[in-house]
Length: 248
Image 1 (cartoon, rainbow, N blue to C red):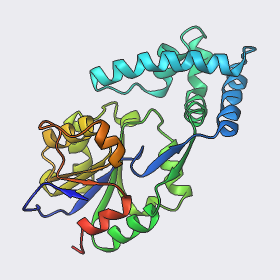
Image 2 (tube, rainbow, N blue to C red; image 1 turned 90 degrees about the vertical axis):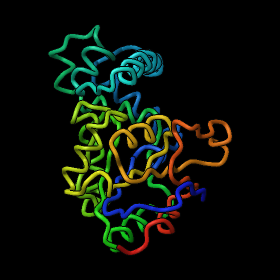
Image 3 (cartoon, rainbow, N blue to C red; image 1 turned 45 degrees about the horizontal axis):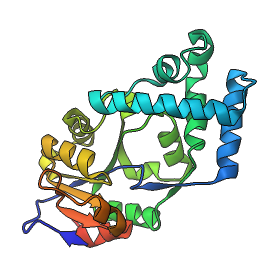
Image 4 (cartoon, one colour; image 1 turned 180 degrees about the vertical axis):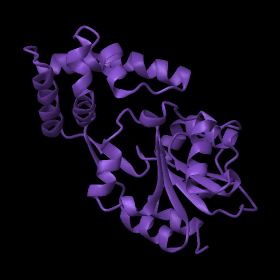
């Protein structure tokens, strides 16, 4: 664990990213292939699911570039009718946009909890911290439904998703919105993420008291922090959060 700060601010709330932080993506070709078939079935395509999804992937890259540049997340209906399937009538695609998003995300792989994440989240809550989620994500339903199904919803007082707010990190409004929902001033909040550029910059602009980055030594060697995106703490395992945040 790598620490930068010498005096740590008082922290009352911990916000956690989802992708590559609370959950990780695992490639599973059988799982991914089944998801591609579901997409083709939903839209009534006679095309090979692999070819169809390869085209969706290319269009998604264009959408992502736009989203990164504008700090905007399109609603799911717009994502599919404007960006991913503009060649199919809107009235056919818009009503099934949430299903398409779900299966498209499954076509990327299976998402599983980080090792020890359940125990860490439970313990941080027990220690007296308010917990929340801030995540850039194209789906509105998947994460809330997953939290409920996995028994984790009880721990998170606020779940702020770009797919619902329409704003993406590093827009500081995302962080301020999360802090307001949980009732804690930004300077007493910490954000735990994995992206040095996006997560550090947004958290700093928003005035959060602390930023923790979870990343592997290999990834950090390839993309080391700079003076512009230096976090307060770098950890390599999710469970190291318990070393940083003692009982309130």
